[in-house]
Amino acid sequence: MPAGRPLKFKNVEELDAKIKEYFDKTPEDELTITGLALALDCERHTIQSYKERDEFSTSIKRAYLKVENAYEKSLRKNGRTGDIFALKNFGWQDRQEVEQVSSNRVVICNDLEEKDGN
Image 1 (cartoon, rainbow, N blue to C red):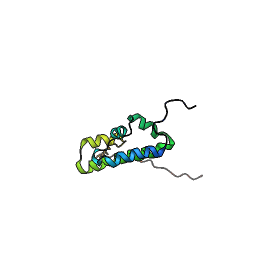
Image 2 (image 1 turned 135 degrees about the vertical axis):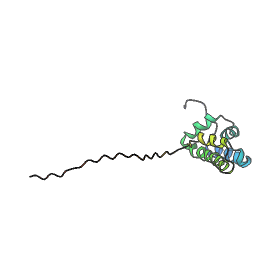
Image 3 (image 1 turned 90 degrees about the horizontal axis):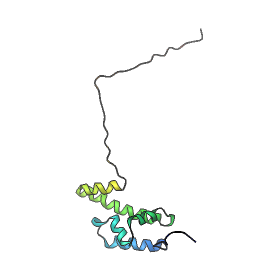
Image 4 (image 1 turned 180 degrees about the vertical axis):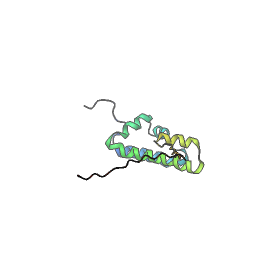
């Protein structure tokens, strides 16, 4: 007998139907992971645990991508810091590259002398 609480969703089809219902009735600019959790009648950490289960992983990852895509589109259109914050929670990062140039260069040269056996 398996330990722990019984699964909220008995199969992938049941989960997919609830996810589809959320995306069908929620405008793109209102998609959130918390909204998805509410639509699935569970907590965010429950969704995370389903993401770790092989049979449900693809469905949850696809749902996350749809929400992430909505934030990315909003960022391109509106440039809001809230979108940046949300995307960072999806693993996005700010990167800065710094190139340092100096006018005083020090070049170390090692002369190698070829020795023949003589």
